[in-house]
Amino acid sequence: MARYNGPKTKISRIFGEPILGNGKWLGKNSNPPGQHGAQRKRKSLGEYALQLREKQKAKYTYGVLEKQFRKTFEEASRRKGVTGENLIKLLESRLDNTVFRMGIAPSRPAARQLVSHKHVMVNGDVVNVPSYQLKPGDVVALKDKSKDNTSVTSQIRGRNPKFTWVDYNEAEFQGTFITYPERESVPENIKEQLIVELYSK
Image: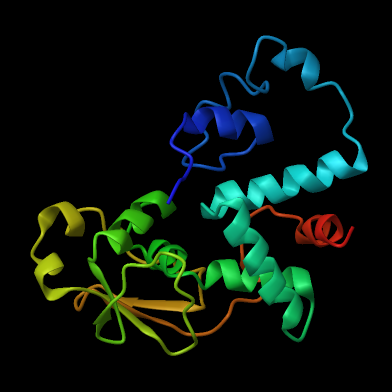
């Protein structure tokens, strides 16, 4: 499956936020990329541009391509509740994102690679689909063989305690997806209502 493999700093400069990785370079050059980046920054964006920008930000943040993102939005709109919040919940419950939230991988791209290379199990079965949707109570763990792989275990940093919807046992290299997170608990700076407005046109 295709995915963005270009410069991460370029994406961060487009949005002015550390979308992919840390934002240490934003302090040196916060202008958008390109020859006229400084001038472009001064332009005010229209309604459609702001909505499109927010969708692109969400796609880059979670590493999802357009077709898959659209399907996720359609599923969010079918569910009960607020569509925008449902969208964030579905993106957060992806297997690759949960592996990242548990601290098994240092970034979402690294988590995606772990899943794709069959290092991760869900409820005792190997799952190599990064977009696999977890349900509350699902147990995510490293394969026994992967637990002895230092290139895998050296990347584990442990769960951030502010992510209360996941649990991780460092001794057993496994964790549980406890529940779908509430929107206010998700730290990503995404205005999901703009995405809903974009797809509602």
